[in-house]
Amino acid sequence: MSGNEQLERARERVIDAIAQNINLYGVTDSVGRLYGSLYFQDEPMTLDAMKDELGMSKTSMSTSVRGLMELKMVEKVWKKGERKDLYRAEMDWYQSFSDLFTIKWRAGVGANINAIEKSKKELLDLLSEKDIEDDTRLEAEKMMTKLDYALEYYDWLQRLVNSFETKEIFEYIPLKKGNTD
Image (cartoon, rainbow, N blue to C red; front, side, top):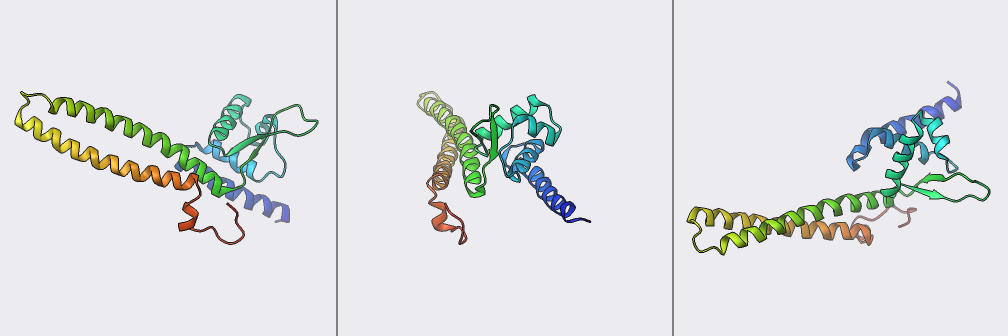
């Protein structure tokens, strides 16, 4: 096997692993392959070049790139003399993880807090009724206790997410020497 074949095999192995595991971030395998391919490029790529490299349609490629941009895993770059849009992968995996984590968890936390607060309001309205049955009152009070506990958890989770955004997390779990924040 030639040196170039070994390089390509090593590159493809990592791209395959990224594609298989990127679903942890809510991203499809094909989008993971795109990110992995961009990661190993020395120069930014056009949508046409990505389409040719991965064999995806231009529409699918455009949608995938847009999704990666929303997750801050890919950015659009400018190059003098180039008329087509160029894209490159975010090379800082610590930053990519932090961005992905905060984007995904903020959305989930917000939705859950909203649901809990609406439910608590309904339960408070129910508990304020004078003719509420004892067993209904007891169940509502038990549910309120559980919802209060859930809100404590989401407060903790918000603070954890904040620690990624502020990079405070690296005070507790430091980067290895040679990595920057």
